[in-house]
Length: 246
Image 1 (cartoon, rainbow, N blue to C red):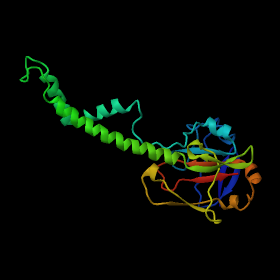
Image 2 (cartoon, rainbow, N blue to C red; image 1 turned 180 degrees about the vertical axis):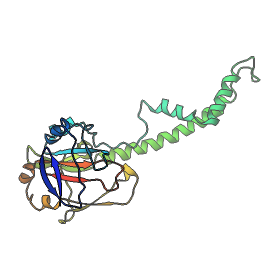
Image 3 (tube, helix red, strand yellow; image 1 turned 135 degrees about the horizontal axis):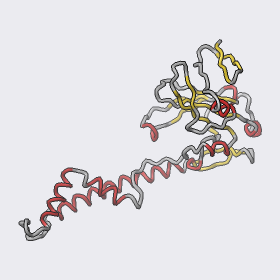
Image 4 (cartoon, helix red, strand yellow; image 1 turned 30 degrees about the vertical axis):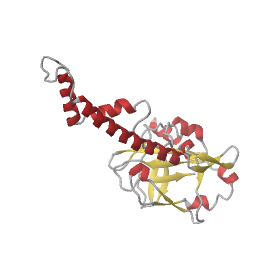
């Protein structure tokens, strides 16, 4: 067993858990009160390396809203109706060949140096090539928009702590801290697809916290659940620290 000291109080921890000492006052007192912002939620390990932490409060949407986490809407499309034309034109003429023929077309409009009597002879061919490419880009991005809408409209069962019932909502309406019901087998195991987030097609195995799903048997029990989840979000660690505090 090892000891963790927080504001003079010593708590025992298993040897296989990392040993952390929280930062000194005033940040230490703010940590205990759960008042740290997303930027302030840091701890130091034995090597004095700063490691950011992510707090998620259970059944407490007000505290989660203060942390200003991003929403659950998935966007894989590159353009909107307003940004499509300027972004695509910028992309098209960032290509060396298109930029070259555009300059040639502009120079052909100057009669003093033009061999085409001021007519941009290269412009029609360039316009056709750019237009065809823009059509294909628009079709591809339209498919992305449709795929995003299908993904964001997937129905999920989100727990409403005030009504103490699970309500069906589109996945786009979820926020950090919401509790959802995933039902397949009673063992507390599920498989998560993260292809739209990190590109991995393999399903990731996730298992519920045993002390939670064995003691919470009803929606009323879930409504009484209070606590927070602490997640180490340091990318330098291959095995980030995950803790559930109830």
